[in-house]
Length: 117
Image (cartoon, rainbow, N blue to C red):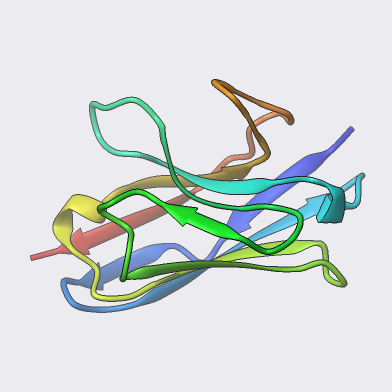
């Protein structure tokens, strides 16, 4: 069974930075497209950044230019570097392997990001 463990969240002031990590156990992620999802308070979880097996990346408009998704296949880990954070970036961040409207693996516990104004 694959287990995804997210870390790196915290409380940061607007304009600050955080680097999130997603470590996987039970399976090698190098064969998967991977993504970072955000669930803002009172909203549905949304995919905000993804990286495919070849390293190509996509972002939502809100993440573009501020966030960078990357992967280290040797460490079986996916990262999200978040810069110029805004209060609207607040939420619980999860990683998973997107499959259309669905995901491939059970959700981890996520990591809380809180951006104060």
